[in-house]
Image (cartoon, rainbow, N blue to C red; front, side, top):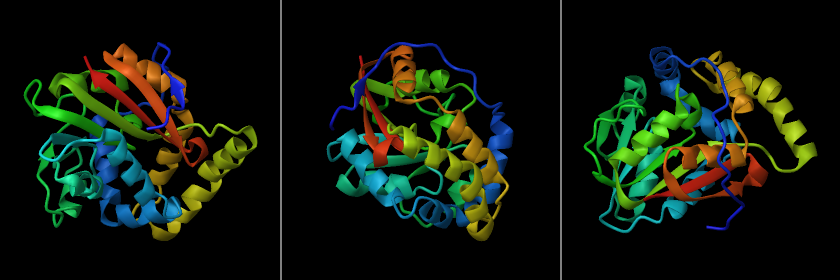
Length: 238
């Protein structure tokens, strides 16, 4: 994993008001066409982001990995491709039902209160879900609780493009084009207005790295994908 930066500890920045029950209900409403909408909105880049996340985790065959905010479990199937025992976890029952045909274990659970025992998994992955959590640092601590010492966390999340002109164009796309495209393909287009706002309000790479450190993860580093549209953050359980 190429290193795009090193972590510097920083405080949590206030974001959007995210009530878990309301966010879960929103995802229930978009579940039916969620995967299609993601592929269209990302221009087909989502599959490559999933592969990069699996590679960053680097789990060995037989390892147990928890995929938090797994949605319809398409990301969990990717993680399981290397012989990994991957478990899908999401607080949206609608999402889990939409992915019922995917042959991976599934469990309903909140990122801030996972239904797993202490030090019961070898790694945790959360893709495009941390920004929807009411208290991201509390969730990062919870991920540490369930991870065995030496285990790995990978956070795949939208981030801040590193080139200024591209960042400006990208922000314009988020607030104008993304909701318009969602109206054509999503089962609940209004939800994508929230999603666009949540991406714009999310911290840049160095600040998120600081959150991982604040939550107790060591060796924190990140790698930019697609010019910083997405960033992979990785840390190790002490």
